Length: 319
View (cartoon, rainbow, N blue to C red):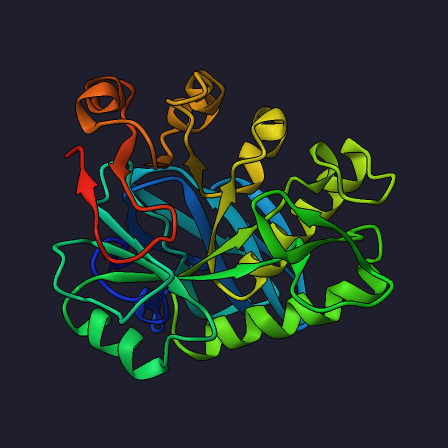
């Protein structure tokens, strides 16, 4: 019986794996650790009707199957057992999620500047080439891809009212997952193919705005859960952007939160379900002076900073 270590904090997501578990009398162990709550994915196969028991959870395996289970933050020993029908475990992956103290940089406009000391970069999906992601990985940084999931700069029957302050963008009819689903899946595929570690889908609170469609809270929950599920299927971490009214319901489905101006509008307490779960909360303020919000951000355990509204490279962090 051999205990194997998975380092979930330093390497890009595709490298966080075990490929050679050794078994003794149908039992094996793996020492796993994660800096924040995440998921563990076990790729198993059996030629007969097999049963795999993972820390007391019984899972049926016949043919090939990927078993996904929650993994709390910290270090633990994972125990696996199989019965008479031998179940082979080809690979164990620990999905990456940012630790609550992760330093970060957010840039969506202007020439990309990689000179900032940051453990996490959040950059545009389409404008950022794979070589930039690889270069940041080589420095030990994680990289998040940004795209707008709930709005469009194009027209069409699914485009509704313009976003306030952003006249080139229109809200989408998120009820139409039959049309939007495949588009979002292709974007997530591109995110994973470029080597990103996670995704920041924007404009995921259309139901709380004048979208031009009769959107209800239930429509938004369905759409946002779809985003989380599809991201996780690709091994991508995903953050909940704003959507404060649904934080308590959606926190279990998302790995971290990113909020704009919660200190300016006195809304930061609504993000506490994430910090209570040991998950990272990133905050950007645009109008307040750092001394007006940084002390409260540090006390709350938020990683906050002052950014220009156009989200260029400039930043003033609170850490």
